[in-house]
Amino acid sequence: MILNESQILERLLDPDPERRIIITPLIRPEEQFGPTSVDLRLGTDFQVLTRSNITHLDVVKSPEQLSQDMHKCITSVKVNPTQPFVLHPGEFALASTLEYIRVPLDLAARLEGRSTWGRLGLQIHATAGFVDPGFSGALTFELSNVSTVPIQLYPGVRISQICFFQSVETRLPYDKKRFTKYSGKMSTAASAFFRDPEYARIREAQEALTYQY
Image 1 (cartoon, rainbow, N blue to C red):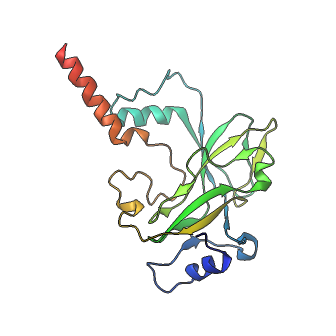
Image 2 (image 1 turned 180 degrees about the vertical axis):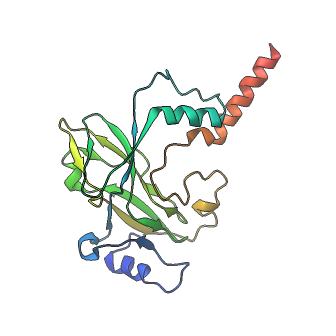
């Protein structure tokens, strides 16, 4: 069941901290509330993937080495509220919500783009639109411009919306998952794929083969 605007508001004001949805700062509720969603705003921090002399990200390197390689491919940009971040056609950038979000254990959420921006060619996520029960922090945008003209994006502009779904209370909240990587982040977070356990197993298997020969 998807929550409507009255149910979302009830959860935002719930005196029980375990049931309460947190969206803060909620600057203009009259502008942000929809029938079954709340609009979220763009933050001030961006990370742009840039060209580098790295031919590829070698997943058998150590997490520390891969983290250094990732930094060579990323340019961090911080803009003032009155300055635009320009996303050019075909460009990809990470950003985050201005708001801090907390999802109770008996709800899940979806982050989606607003149709106003979709009609200009802005995509706000590639695959990561689902928000687990127990998540807290800023949500990351995976911004792509699929149009033929640059798009100016100002911090504080409503580019997305979040909706909430009722579920049975989870026993495995997001921040308690063993390999959680993004819980509690307050600004734009780059990919930490190299910390997934699969890559540790690949490294171990390759090292074992090396020793055999």
